[in-house]
Length: 182
Image 1: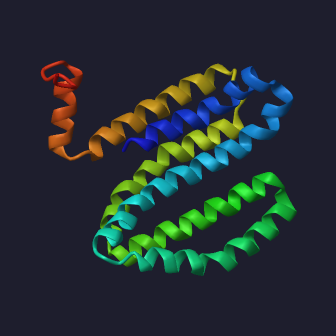
Image 2 (image 1 turned 180 degrees about the vertical axis):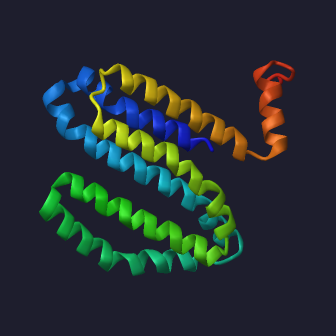
């Protein structure tokens, strides 16, 4: 719930930020790699739930075995994708490894219902990814569609929060209860 809006905004702002920071030439090469990695970061955050569950259940061996199992396919994907696409290929290989790891962890933890609940969060991320790659960042439509996707991702994030967390957040935002007590 937290990472979806962060990744959507990151996907949309990484290129303009890099243009301001390091210039247009380097930003043109670095922004796509950063955008690919942001998608992988979002996928990887999903894996924390089943990973932690398996650790708490006394099965830390399962994620470790998965990591060993993923090693050879990951190295092969790295080899092929770097050869074909360069640094962006390495980012795609990491995304594929993280996706495989996440699916294996959800399978081992028997949490596919939870995965189905959060997978709809990928829609705003996919939209932001397509917009970030397909439109010039200084276009009015980029700003309009980006804002719409950012708002949609925040609304989706609030919708999937359990009711008690949503109400607690509402109370804190509207100062019915302080964030911290001294």
